[in-house]
Amino acid sequence: MNSIPSFFTGLIRELLAPPGDVCLTCGGKTRLTREWPGICRRCAEGIPWIEHPRCLCCGRAIGCPDCLRPEAQQRFFVMNRSAVRYNEVMREWLAQYKYRGHERYAALLVKMLGQALTGMQREISMATLGTAARTSAESPRLKLLNQSRLWRPDVVTYVPVSAERLTERGFNQAQVLAEGIGKAFRLPVAPLLVRSEHTSKQSFKTRQERIESMKHAFDIHMDGFQYLNRMGTAELKSKGSGMRGMALRDSDGQPHAFAQGVNKTPQILLIDDIYTTGSTINTCAGMIQAGARHYFGIVPDIYSLTWARS
Image (cartoon, rainbow, N blue to C red; front, side, top):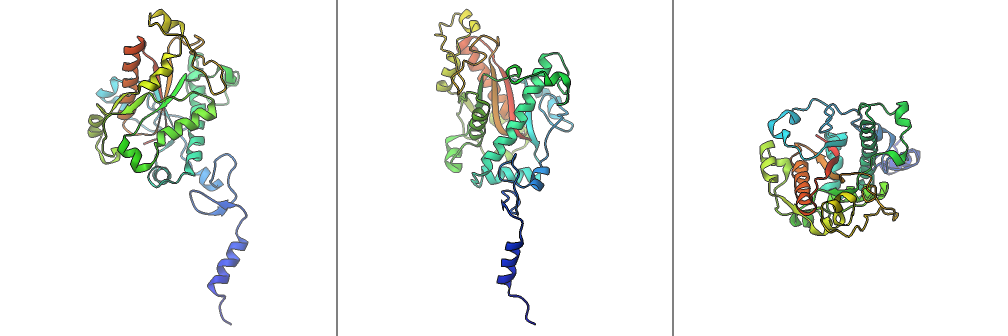
């Protein structure tokens, strides 16, 4: 008896395949998860989440020599937290999105980053209450923290890319992540920095080369700083800056916490796709603080949130 032709074999396999869509990451046809856009359960279970950072400064899940180096003593950001460890699978996900223009990854990465931000909010809020920052999610005290009491940044911003890189890729991946977070958490997003110097890809550089290349790569985005100009807190007014006091507002039109004078220091969340040596994040944080000090006479607290930590 002749074997079944390959055409019919493929057709039979397709008919017998599990119902569902094609998984964005593995290409399998199966049921997709509800919580993680575009991927199947198997791929979702393989995500290398950073649930308990070993380094409380940079958020790394394993031993961190970076934060022990002398240059790390001059840090302009309070802390960094990342959603996942940057392994080979995550490298491919980011490459599909960042370099190959696979736009469907955007919703997935934003959702993953949002989970990291939720954990970050709880961690900072618990630390503010005088409880160890690494308290588990099941803590009775943590359950007392309702949404209104969770730490919230006043402004979300992002690491900018050069005009050359923007032309090459067609978008700034950090900006997309920041705007996604802003929409999901109802937070204002402002471009506080511009890329003043085009640099070659960081992935091709040594640690020292990364640090050196970042020193003069950024400048203040004056239009973005007008957002800070309109916060109008009592502290800003007490500095004699002559600002009008136009409160910065969330997407729902409600005055933000800083605009209402709840926080004495602006809380700024800086977003990027990956934290490697921390040189990019630290340089950006330092530039934002220098700009705020120069124009407003205050030094904001900068928090960093990245999708992956290498």
